[in-house]
Image 1 (spheres, one colour):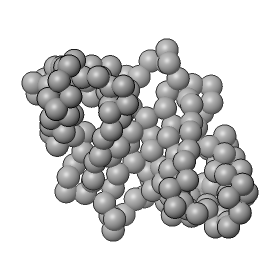
Image 2 (spheres, rainbow over the protein chains, first blue to last red; image 1 turned 60 degrees about the vertical axis):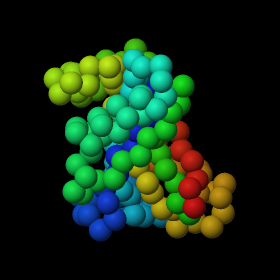
Image 3 (cartoon, chains in turn brown, cyan; image 1 turned 30 degrees about the vertical axis):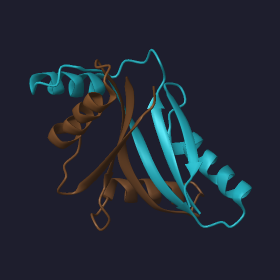
Image 4 (tube, each protein chain N blue to C red; image 1 turned 180 degrees about the horizontal axis):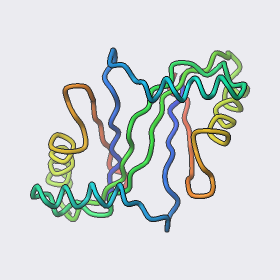
Length: 80
Length: 80
């Protein structure tokens, strides 16, 4: 079973990486692009046929490793 | 207008970062998670009311800066 996982900074958390991208876009003439926020995107496969169990494993991966819940949110979708 | 942009490694391109995450998950008891691939996820706002023009700007941002098309694919969706 295949999932995609999104990890994004919570609202209000400064995003210097996104800001750097935004400035770089401005420098190459794309100044109408604003408020760039950068997050992480994972695709993962779970070796588990029960969908509920697979989702529990993905959630556990996010909570334990992929996301820092103090400053980040995560969400995930089954894609296969 | 708000878009989300996904930048992912092309199939066949080695992903040491994803591999490191997979190994780390194995080390904390989540060894049923396989084939982790890590990509980038951006949310961006475009100061443009015409949807076609906005999409052209997002595509241009991807081609010029956000993605390295030699090794990465990109896709984007309008979210607001």
